Length: 218
Image (tube, rainbow, N blue to C red; front, side, top):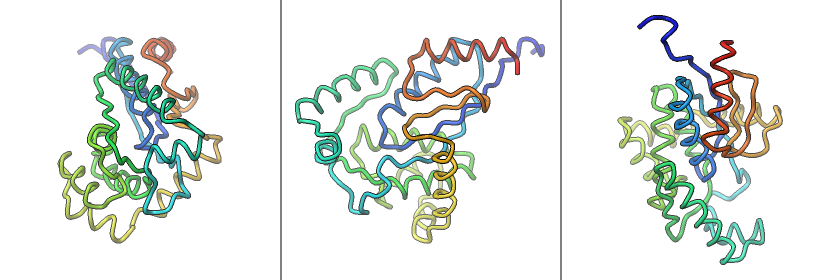
């Protein structure tokens, strides 16, 4: 392939939490936009906990939304229906099973390990499906090890990573970096270390920026 025909590679740093539905939608919109814009993506995932002070036992999603945001069951149902429609548009099934729970610190530790194995993106997608489609507890070591196994990682090593907490300090340090840079909500996407988008901005919104970056050539 001639050099001028090669796809422009855009680095995208995505600050995300695996229990953030807008992170699922936004990432899938971004991937679709890249295809539309004719660019390649170099995605780097970074940790963010929506509920960093939540006890390890967690909290059921419906109860959490009511306590934190004052959402009524009807309002929660409407929000979920909207997300299901948006998910369907980008090929993701939000089932929102009963009993979904919230902590994610262990998930981020496992993702940090998966990054060293070149499987961070695959594990992110597996955890999104495990949580939103299957209702798995993504703070449970057994569920996390199973997700790791589904993307070709060693489940036994995954369990060891979670037992010894070898990546706990690295995750906390990475979280602090992004908070100090002003990140307070997810998804936050940084394109080529200069352009920032927060939230799921739609295929067209992402495509416009990617096309601009490709034309800019920097």
